[in-house]
Length: 113
Image 1 (cartoon, one colour):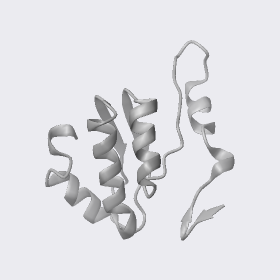
Image 2: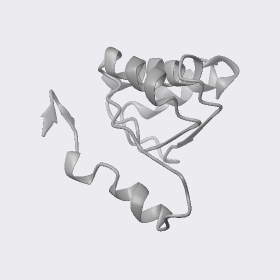
Image 3: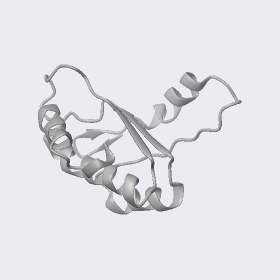
Image 4: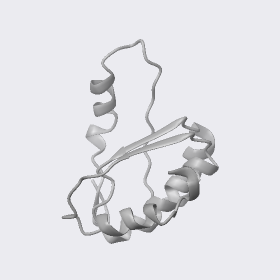
């Protein structure tokens, strides 16, 4: 399904986590998080309260950069996440990636990231 111009791969939600963990010995869970949905982000931050945020391939379009940064800030400050691990491609082929990197490097999240 789509949300405007954004692809939301609902049929794959959680599949990567289950595959990568591959064991029942690790306590882990995943939540759907649409950073264009401010109330949904707030609910996940305050109800789910993740210890760690892990993300990869997060930024494709310029319209995603401000809400993604706001989401990360909420998850760290309101949600109590102690760490965020963001895996970004080394290339700058994606339209929004240079701006996202620049915002992070300029302290958009304070000392959080």
